[in-house]
Image (cartoon, rainbow, N blue to C red; front, side, top):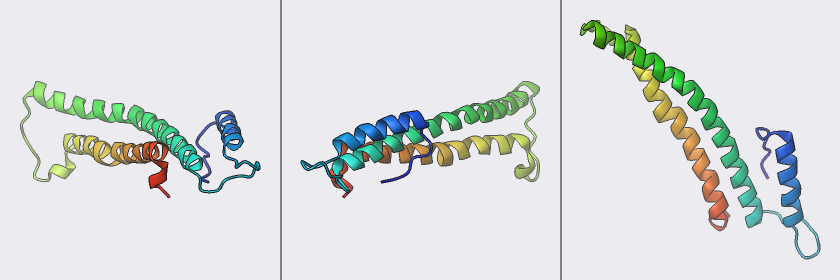
Length: 127
């Protein structure tokens, strides 16, 4: 079973206690590698990634606003000049940052969240 440090202690303790009550055989012994264990891991993985997505989304809004501000400045000033090296241009860098957030950070957390969803709904496929 994975350790889930990201869930607040009260929530995790409550969830783990409930899980432990249910994940036992008829003799009351813990069942290793059970579907229920996989489902529990899936739920905790989804919780973690939804938390991460929220944090990234808050940062992402600032990145979007920076890029929009730079594009708006160009639009309103009629500045269509491009530097010889576009990598030195602030607008170029800010728009690239938006793309990086979308393709890397949001995508990574979304993929991890979906992995948790699949663990929960299809635990038998994870064995």
